[in-house]
Amino acid sequence: MNVYIWQDVECCSANWHSDGGVVVFAPTEIEARALANAQRGCAIRDNEHPAAVREVVGGDPAVYIFPNAGCC
Image (cartoon, rainbow, N blue to C red; front, side, top):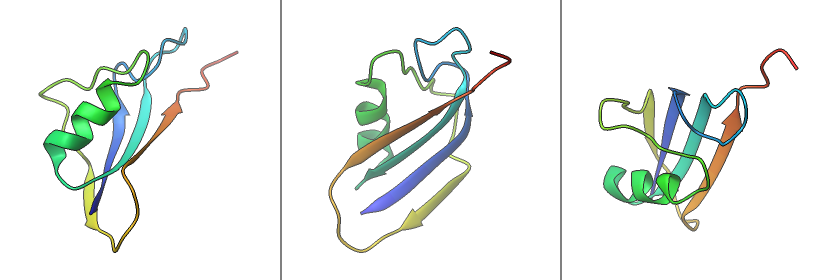
């Protein structure tokens, strides 16, 4: 299992400020992108690459969205 960290995704939520960060636990980057993009409002583009990838022991696939809090 790996953890994939995208620091700055242009569209990761349906919020007014749609950008933010995404963290995904998945076996491969392909699966990580699919899991993230299945979340409402999240659309990690092909040219947006993880800032970091780390191997982790155990765990289940999971997605954590960190939307930009913006000015509001």
